[in-house]
Amino acid sequence: MSEIRHRTVHVNGIDMHVAEKGEEGAPVILFIHGFPELWYSWRHQIEALSALGYRAVAPDLRGYGDTEAPATAAEYTCLHVVGDLVALLDAVAPDQDKIFVVGHDWGAMIAWYLCQFRPDRVKALINMSVVFNPRNPTRKPLETMEAFYGPDYYICRFQEPGEIEDEFARLSTETILKEFFSYRNPGPLFLPKGKGFGHSPDAQITLPSWLPKEEFNYYCTKYEKKGFTSGINYYRNIDKNWELTAPWTGSQIKVPVKFIVGDQDLTYNSPGTKDYINKGGFKKNVPFLQEVVVMEGVAHFLNQEKPDEINKHIHDFFQKF
Image (cartoon, rainbow, N blue to C red; front, side, top):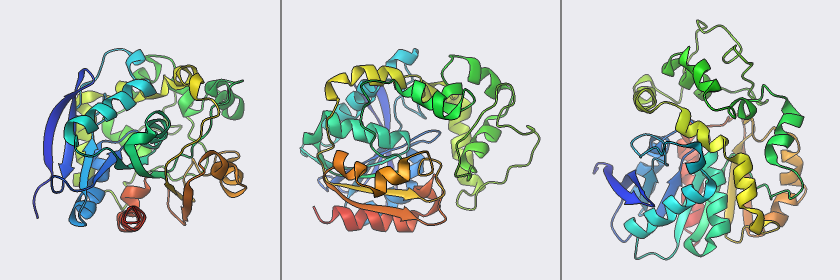
């Protein structure tokens, strides 16, 4: 089997690292990762889908891995990141007007934005973990999060520049990544001020069975070099994204969609999400939503935890188009 190809493409003013596999001219699937992840989170999908006749394209998003990291938090808005991806598609697949998209976590949010801003570029979407939430014109998102969860909620703790970085600096990169990847509590993640992840930094954390040590080490190497600030800067733009997307208030997602989530995922168990999915709200806002799959006993990193099942879902859905 041929190797995954790696290259750097200059797009939207930054140098972006891209991993890809598959024949030139084959239908492109753009894989968009989340936090704290990398292109590498899609390693199983890249191998499987390229073998099924697709061309898998998986970038490190701006600030991650081997992609350039702009210096200021203001350079990580949804418009910047979607701009990167549109420019990437122009560079690597200029012959394809529309491509397939798969997103997870923050990558799912970016995929929703991509479909809002440029539905003309997306043939169909599979999104995982994060539902499409329409913009509430009367209340900023961070106000809502703090009201629901309090100031120790991890997204609220991420807001003050430098604060969470100082706390993370007292832990090892390996410990931080283990904490995130091993998280299986279906409830919200809290980072009490000055207390890290809420237990002793010497506590033994076992890697999940789906993440062998040698694969985990790849993440450690990249985050040791890059740090966490760039990834956290995406969270620091949640309210700014709300401001920037005012013109899209009331807009729907008008591409064919399949949504997949684990029943142990903290996102699926957040207040109101199950009712939103099951009682028609999600379908109203995503009118071409064709299927929702809830995977039993599966947590947040479902594309790595259950790669064979996810690969089959992707292939079965995209071959319809």
